[in-house]
Amino acid sequence: QVHLVQSGTEVKKPGASVKVSCKASGYSFSDYWVQWVRQAPGQGLEWVGRINPKSGGRTYALKFQGRVTMSTDTSITTAYMDLNGLRSDDTAIYYCVRSSDSWDFDYWGQGTLVTVSS
Amino acid sequence: DIVMTQSPLSLPVTPGEAAAISCRSSESLLYSNGNTHLNWYLQKPGQSPQLLIYLTSYRASGVPDRFSGSGSGTDFTLKISTVGAEDVGVYYCMQGLQTPHTFGQGTKLEIK
Image (cartoon, rainbow over all chains, first blue to last red; front, side, top):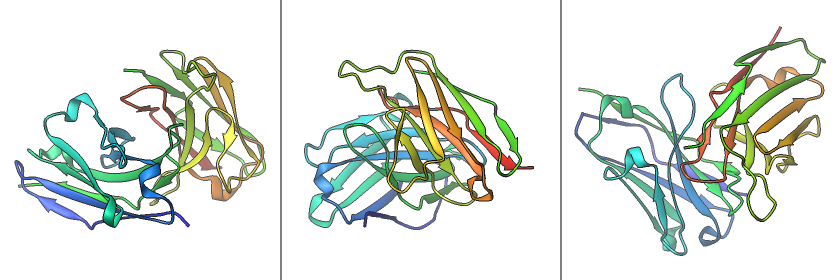
């Protein structure tokens, strides 16, 4: 079955960078988009961006452009999200999510808590 | 950006009763191929969100048939025919028509 397993909790200082990984299994990795969604403590869901592992095509939410980089390594079916210039309001759980071209967001990783604190 | 607005934000329900959540989008979610890109998710306490409904009315794999989605254009509804304790959590609608994909604020369903 489909699994998305993310890397562990991160604690970073303001201005630092974080790289979150998402290991996919149970499906053809290149045939689905990988989306990234975040959730600040006690808050709702916010879309960060997406990447197509086959084409490498990426789209980022405007508020993250210039700070976020998404990538994939198809040889190990893993997606990555790099976020730099961390601020306290980047403290959130970051989820990787599989989606088809119907944008269904059907399988979610377990989430990675990123805490930004001095 | 498309703004998604849910109501109510809090929904106390007696077990066995029906429940409905409304979601409105600031623009039509109808795509040129006839698909309407509105999805529903449930986030149970302490868990990742899970897909319930995609393309307005299609139940995701393994989702009980007591969940149903309907609507068109800018107005959508998620209905639960018989609420159980396992349905507690926060329900989100999301538009998949265009980026940035945007979510509603969430509706917290609790058992009375």
